[in-house]
Length: 312
Length: 257
Image 1 (cartoon, rainbow over the protein chains, first blue to last red):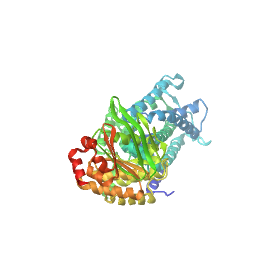
Image 2: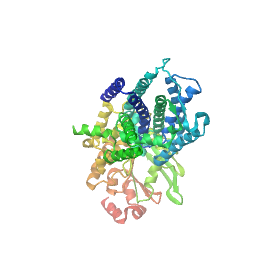
Image 3: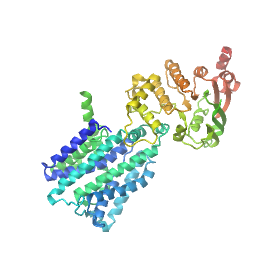
Image 4: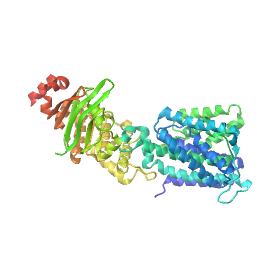
């Protein structure tokens, strides 16, 4: 398999970020790790968007990934981060395989509302679960990787590297996936489902596989977020969180696998500075940002790169 | 010649409306059959039932000797029954090349790979050959939205042919196409049909086109077949003249024959 230019660039960017972690302040390391973890959930949203579906319920898998990490540590005594992530992934794959059977039969607003409904069901269950801390959630236990427990001062850089490692593998996979037979079939379904069926391809099967993969990647993002934040709460499944993922997806656009990562970091920085400088109106700043993006860059921030390439 | 498609007592009702009533027809391999009829006569309903788009209310359909009633478009396409549409069903926001590559990829591997690139040099040259054959070479990298209607129709038909079907059903291949483009379009399609030795059934309103390209006509009216035979036989049939072609055209045809 030949490595293409995009893949070299992705690898270069991730290595650069990994190296820069030595020189960044601790708060920025955590901000980057959390933004990149959330970017993985956004990748899932983008995968669905490429197939013409908008999910307002990716918070469901974000939350399951997070709670699997939290519960695996607290109730099962598992401290290995990789094992905890694997648990979140397993739970999400099973749930996505069940819900996907129903959800991939729906389109447009019906799909969006059903995904939102399922995530709100989980939110409602968690809010009423006193054993899981109700609305407050609970803390994630101190984790290790393959038997090695990072010291207090090393936690930030370790989790950033781990997020970058997962992010890199997923980015490289998605870069191929978007250009593969099934990736293109998703775009074809968005454009014309009738023709796809008359080409002998099962649109249901394509959408189902795409949905399960999108949710699995979302769950990994949720698990990593829980490890970064050291805390999980029901807000992870709340509709506003799913809305945030859609927001970031629109901000970045669906043009390239790198777009959600860039958009997630920009979103985190804008929000951090907006909260810092305009604490009572930071939502307004985010709203205006989205408005400007939709008006001037309807295909997201990534279109700036493609435009530049066309004019060169 | 061996029979490739057969329908028996095919009916389709939409509530109280009868769209197709007791359609029994047999088509031999290699035949080129024209389907004529006024709007609402049941032509497209017939094609939709045969290609799995609409389930029949009653009756049965056989393709290659096997019953295909109840099978959907996907399975029928894989069995070698392809169709084009009155309104071309294309991927509008993608380029002509991408449209063909998706179709080629699906034809080669309907299960679809998760990571193998759909764009390969072999597939691209295959797509280029198809573009050349259909006279669409100049639109290679254009978005479908930038193409004229005639070119879209050709692309729609080319995509239907990619899976190497045994039978092709064309729903009004020249509708919406300018008078100048109609004959070149049909010549191109029929050349490919002859090269691939396909059985073709096509719905058409233009009687000159029908006369020129088909060896047999099925005339539909009010959901029923009212004429089935050679172009001369059907065009001279009184019921067909009365309900479809009009008396003057029938008279002209009779005079010409």
